[in-house]
Image (cartoon, one colour):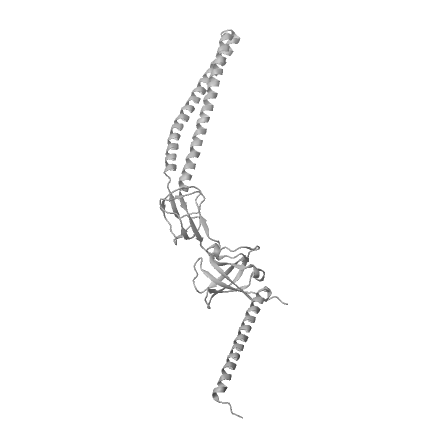
Amino acid sequence: MKKPTNRSMSKWFVPVVVICLLAACGGNKQKKEEQQQASLDSLTRPENVAVVSAIAKVVPQAGLIKLSSSVGGNVIAIQKTEGDTVKKGDVILVLDAEDERLSGDVIKREMVTQRSQAAADEATVKQFIAELEEKERDLAISERLVTSGAETRQNVAEKKKERDVILANLQNAQNKAKASRSQIQTLRTQLNQSQVASGNKTIRAQQDGTITSMDAKVGSSVQPFESFATLAPSGKLILQGEIDEMFASRVARGQSVIIKYIGGKDTIGQGRVTYLSPVLSDKSILYETSAEAQDRRVREFKVEFDSANPLLINHKVECTIQVNPKSR
């Protein structure tokens, strides 16, 4: 029998190796697909999940506050800008208050005139009071003289009519003086309102904090109750995030949280869940555009944390919430 040569053996060896390699690759691919499918299957059962990851944002515990004014006007000065800290009572914006000042000046002049009128009305009242007292004394004397025949009843009747006329004039003068005093009070109220309106054109901080954004500009107008800036109140910072609805029921208050930079491996802080929304809502706080959000619901959560690394407001981090698998 003829012995096979090396050339003939190589013809058979190469195809066999290729077949074995293909079989091995096919086996690895199938194994990888099976692992991926197993991973996906586990996600369909939230009770199998031991940790839940979510993106959160650093926010003040009291929340960001939109600043607005109860009155509108043109901005003539900006005393605090983005990044500035403020104390309660600090001036932030100054609006043009020229109309209020002019209105106040007009009211002050009216008050001067009205006070003069009120003084004249009071003098008239005093004059009629004096005339009435004199006429009452004269009438009393005449009535005594009638009994002795020294005065006629006709003269007494005429004096009574004169007394009644003076009394009517006195009452009219008193009513006029009262109206003058009331008008002064009305003008005083209007002046106070004008001064308050003028004071409202100076917009002050209502609490301590930091201005995180300022939309107003000198020369622009501010509308009543329309936000012109955002204030981060002084105080503790927390994390606010959203959990996908699939895992929303697995998270509970008090669970521990590991904090990392997004995409990072090192732990930068730790905390615990302190708040869970009682309802599911649309994705919101962590998506800059509507295209980023998918048609899924989320549950809002908040975390009190400690971090060795300084975190700024609106800084996004990754939160890994330690949830315990449910017993089977």
